Image (cartoon, rainbow over all chains, first blue to last red; front, side, top):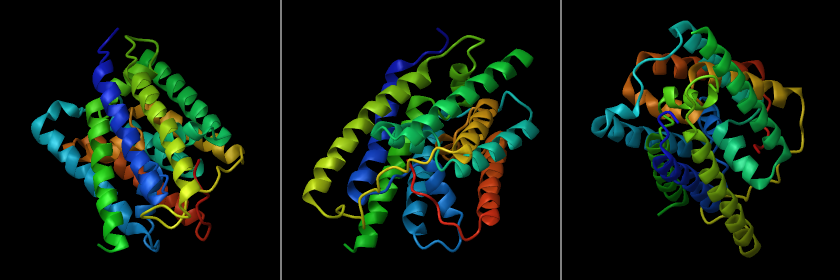
Length: 139
Length: 152
């Protein structure tokens, strides 16, 4: 198998869920990332402070990894920039329309057996696999 | 410490944990995510391990929430426990999830890892997050006045 890294995947997956779990248990917030970020972009929303702190924490630790282990990040993309822009727009619009992304629907919702989140997760995984596989053939 | 200050400390710590999780798991590298989503090439099952472990921990989390809510009317640093999940399964949910999936499959980024990756300064990442933010704002503007439905 190509580039399979199960140990770091397990540690990272546990930390991601721990982050969502501590938010949920201590504040009652389902901190799915598309929702956290989109709420930060709503200028008139009252509860932007904790969202800004959350994203600030993400960026601070992300910057630490950039300094210590720059290979944490890819420098390029496998599709042209115009397609990357289209992809970003699809992710932004799609996660707002369906009210969640990989963390909100895929983890928080699926783990409480929400039918809505299960349907959303199966749909975006199926669309993701189909799209990436077709693009892989074209490249 | 005031309630708002406690919430800020929890949020920044949890944001940090999330950032560490996506960086360590490899999800900040679209090439790795696409190695999972593209089943036509050299397949990389890493994303499945990330999801499986994270799901197991999240299932345990909801058990903790159930135990806590039996004892306390509100969370220690919040106003309310989450509402039961919405049961609405409509074209908006499925269509939105499909659009998200297509974008994810094109670029290999979902929102969380993309936001963290902004610190790399890579042009593709900045373009992706800029377009994502613009589309989110566009949806808000089009639907101005409607409140977000509860998630999950």
